[in-house]
Length: 616
Image (cartoon, rainbow, N blue to C red):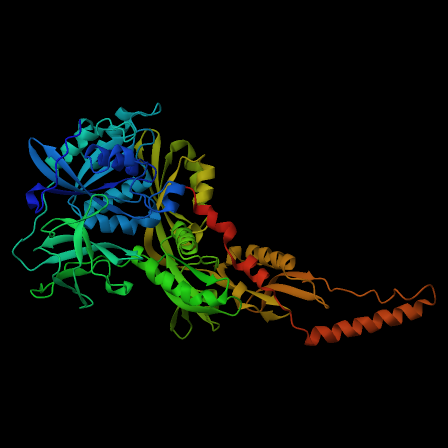
């Protein structure tokens, strides 16, 4: 029997518990959240559907959480009614920024581990994030109903990781609901209540926001001090913009208007504002009449890891793409973009992403939600180039690579953590060394699970590293990575020349050892894509003035001997020589027209976007 209770109108901070669920991808966060919603009675059985909080079609299709979702649930313990504010978070490494913002709005975290798979890379990453935020951790083993579950083994592993007894680890099943009531009781008993001054000027932290077509910007806040009430005027402390609060309430899990939000409460604000730039994640909301003097500490802005160009297939869609990116940035605070033009593809945007899955999800959302057809160019990372005169240039695109004498090129590095069964150690080491990785350490978490730490160039892992890792370890390895400084590397710009003229759009920055392979791949690809001309066209790959690969597109030849039936050989030779002279003159003045389809096929990363689809 569910022990639910109506949520009090003005909740006493002592009766509030704010927590989030953190785990590696596919460890059952959303399923456990479903059971909590049912047990607390905020979602009726007839309305229940799997992964209830995953609102986007793309989340439901892929079975992954992309957006954090906040929900308020009532729970009764020992005759007292409590309000539980839960945030369901994503598990994928590309959405760590969502997790970090959710943690800042909570006092505790439920650390979820799959009882059949054990601790994985993202489990560790999210645990360390929670510890940095000084949160109370409740360790939980999920999926204990699976035949392959080993609860005793993984409970000991989890207890060893966070320092505690295996008996303290709760055993639950999100699917069947076993142990979920005990977990809710433990959350009420062990998590601290939020602390704040109810009489101080109102201060609330914006931890998320979404754009609603009908209601404008919906802002999600966690109140730290004071109280926010409907119909009062509020001010955003960083932009100084002021608005009237049209509606204020809690998500339970559908929006429910209330008479205000007090200390420790999590809810939403609607001001009717349509301008998406006026509601910045990490900003502090205060009362206009009695403003706070000091803003709350915001979030560190996420640094984009991977850059890719996004161009509309139809040039007239450029303003639509700009508006779509503006609106999507409100839903996804980690998105960074700036306008860019390409000789081949026209007007578009250079967009920064946190990883390849992030790139893929953003592109798919833009195409679906805003009805756009887009080309995304092959992703690349940011390099710092120092010239002989000690001036430096930041390069996010091969066309920006300086042409002068180069003193050194620095490339970004990442600290990669790989967890896998110990039988795959050799295969993982071989892969990391082939990607120019340097080993930082190795630890055995248990007798058959090992953690490997590597320092790897980011350019080597953003493309197909994860795919190769999964195939070499039969799907058992898990990967987590974070930016970790830079290093000097022997990097070169490979130019592609058509009939001696450089085509900037096909250039790439790559390591000297891999330049030849790129040159051969690109020249052979273009030979297939570019239609034959009236004259022979050489396609060359070059580093500076040195040609490293070449392919020829054969000329289309008219049969000038067709009218010669028999006769003297000198007549035929004369005709062929005349044709040869004509071809030579044509080659001197002729220009190679590269069709749009060839550019799209060569530049688009469609064959690469799927490479990071697998779950990390």
